Amino acid sequence: MVQVSYGQSGAGRIWRRFRNHKLAVMGLAVIIMLVFCALFAPFIAPHEPTKIGKEFESPPSGQYLLGTDQVGRDVLSRLIFAARISLSVGIGATAIATLWGILLGLEAGYFGGITDMFIMRIADVFMSFPMLILIMVVSSIVGSGLSRIIFIMGVLGWPQVARLVRGNVLSIKEMDYTKSAVTLGFTTQRILFLHILPNTISPILVQATFGVARAIIMESALSFLGLGVNPPAASWGNMLTDAQSLTTLTERPWLWLPPGIMILLSVLAFNFVGDGLRDALDPKSIE
Image (cartoon, rainbow, N blue to C red):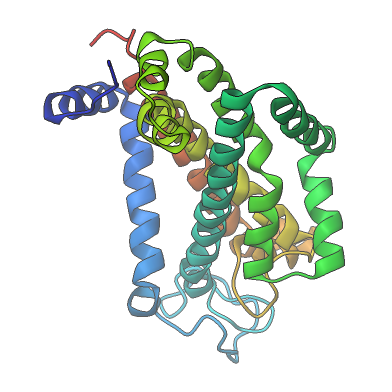
């Protein structure tokens, strides 16, 4: 039986291909920086993110490098702590969606028939609604909050992964090594998780990186609309909520530019890494 194997030499080839994608390397550096800020936020942030000061809407200065918001909180400190929220939502929601998508996609593609039709019709129903609108409706019913947002986005985000996995399983199960495994009497679980899943993991990884970027955008949109992370917790989205007035947009750019730039950088970083992984994991790519 032939299986995809990423040994030491295979990993080296993948890294060389990925390294040739300059934007992907830059995106990976940005992601590492964000993870570092999220993990060590209490040690990096110059002030408490929820501490109310005496200087309201103060411009950037030596004491407050990115200024203060409407109630005197340090913008830089809130920006650093907000990285925890965005990465938690992005990675957590994507992990849940990917897990559900893998399980349902494997079942739909391998068993086919009524199982395939049932799972895919449910996926079609989910995908027929705009994702953001659907998340907003569910959030307004069950309530907002970090853990609820992660769970809702994860549960509603599985159809894309499931369809991707199903498509790969439909072709892989017709391969000789899969048919040989069936002939040898291997259990269904062993065939699915030891012979089929490893050979479809590459597109799943690429899909997951794009999924993190989408989750960060959706969390920011929900928080901006007041359906995401509840104040006083810092989120890039709810930091933008207070910058909706024309006066703030024109006269106090330190209130909306930093969170806007962080959303842009994080989304671009994950998208670039996804592009790099797609090229690096493509067996047809030429070094």
